[in-house]
Length: 274
Length: 340
Image (cartoon, rainbow over all chains, first blue to last red; front, side, top):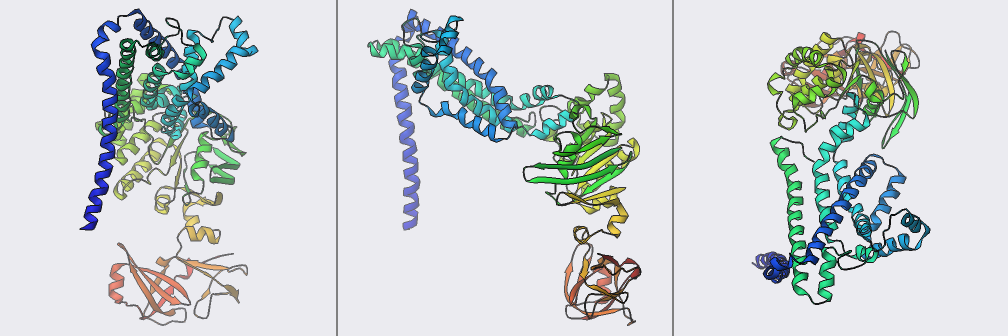
């Protein structure tokens, strides 16, 4: 009898903690949306929010593109070559993941703002400090390690022996990569692109340090939220927050869907999936 | 045709040492050895997936040690098939063929191959929907259609159920007969080796322990490790005394061509017969225990060493043996061998 009560108590506690957390998340996020919705139609047409949306889309899409172009070869290299050197590379690549984004921003600011390297780039027309390029660079720097990790996992799940077979059938390394490895890892890569894009849209700390927070110049959605909250323009702030919430939740759903789709397709056999 | 010279390679926990091997055109060569002995590493070196740390690989006299796998024209079939899951059966088979032949030539080659492997009804299916046996047939077709110089088979039957295994052994024999392809097949199963091989190489602990014709290896193992791995049930240590090999007071074997360096005597449990007569060459001992299998019964007789005797179920019933019974048996003298 006593055991039964203890078991029920244990299960009940677990359930209540879960429920409390779900309520906290749903209520707090809903409050933002509820505050944002009434003025949403007006706010979204304000030049400032429109600018922030456009700039956010522009910077996040470009930074995701750069991340993808760099991550695929690096992740593949790390997935296939096993040496002390790759172990070192792996550890270094983890650093941006561990750093608070604002610290990453300071590091980038020092590199591009105070060194000869930064000045040389600046003379060549590549100015990163307090510019839109700076936002893109900050987003790439903060997100790339995360993207490499996800893509690395999907490359690891493709057996090297599958590639050996393709090589034996007459395909060189690049052809094998394009025809076998990439298609088999594509769901992981797609998921990585979606989540990286969502993270880039929300990137704040590093971009704030490197690109600054100048209205209608380097004002992305999260910066717009920050600026409007500081000046008390709540409607605009909530509109920016609402857009960010919608995009985040949607991308989370797509990410989950891509993850589960691989398994479903595996079972029906239409596709090997991840 | 294929020659491996002093190949050494360490890869993770697997390593092979000083492997020398020659496989002639048209041979069905089985590389036999326990799991984890580096057989797959050797096969992957031959295919060009790894470069040996030391040593060379020659194909038709040409040094191919550093040649990329895509230029070697070798077919590779893995134990777990490694079909491309995002392609259907036909796309899998055409994948390699497209690189080597024009479309008309592929069509011409496909017909007889599909018929022989009996896969015409699954050409539109995806690998995940196929049974193990079907997947292995497709993997064989994908390789064979490219007309490989050598077919490298890495434990191709190991993950199949016994019936499918037997059927596919028939298929492999037919492939070898029809296409005359040189085959290098690795396995840990002696029955596969006995059934398929013309020649056998035995790998133990990363080295080539013995190479030869299939019957020769099973009849005259080179050393105690080989004999033990081959599953020869009766191996006893002893020494030579006046042309007789003496293991103990009860076990003495007169052997022709016995050399003084003999250290072990061996014979198969099939070569022992139970007898009623009591001639000078018979052995007498008591039954220690009896173990029954599906096809035969093994009688363990205590002779100081345990001598194993294999009987059919019928023979076993006729003799109505029980543990503790005294029995008389003889060993076919032609089949007793010795190892230094």
